[in-house]
Amino acid sequence: MREIKFRGLGVEPRKWIYGYLAGAGQIMFWDETDNGNGLMFQVMPVTVGQYTGLKDKKGKEIYEGDIIPRTEPSKKCRWLEIIWHECGFYYKCSCGRIFTYPAVSGDATKVEVIGNIYENPELLNG
Image 1 (cartoon, helix red, strand yellow):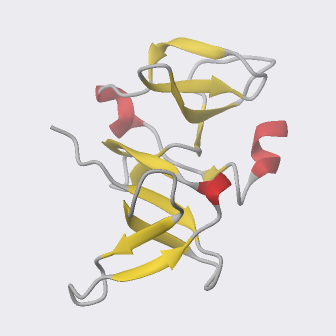
Image 2 (cartoon, helix red, strand yellow):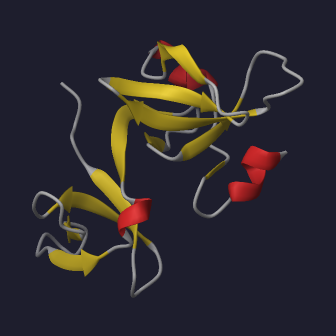
């Protein structure tokens, strides 16, 4: 079973906060990294992304909104964004196309997260 957790870009401090949603629709996180005491942080709602349950080839957790290079050659699409679509995590091409095969697969250990759509939006244009 995959671990259900989230990340969001904090309002103050402006850094990635990892943890659990405090309630439905709320933008607060329970961050358990502070010696187990737990702290609440407010994050920007648009940046909230769920953990896919996978790690890339360097062991980095892959979240919704992360960007990876496309492995097959394409003139229109060089980068792929991880998105939640209907009932699972899928790839969304930088050209806007949603791939019909799921992002959650054993192939995750062959890719590397190179950024995310919030801090590196220029990657989707290139």
